[in-house]
Image (cartoon, rainbow, N blue to C red; front, side, top):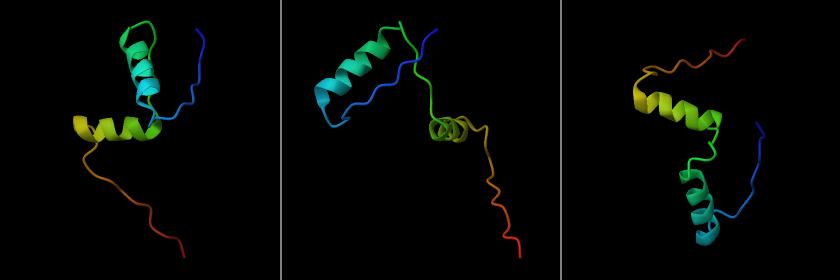
Length: 57
């Protein structure tokens, strides 16, 4: 398996549509970022509370 990193201007509608169509073809998969995974956890109810670390003196 190979990993491909793409950089494109997401404001360019043609470029974004081409990437979306390529991903929708099912030939490739998209790896989620840590932030996207965390947001999915919240949406799916896998995360119910957030604990923030206390500041050490």
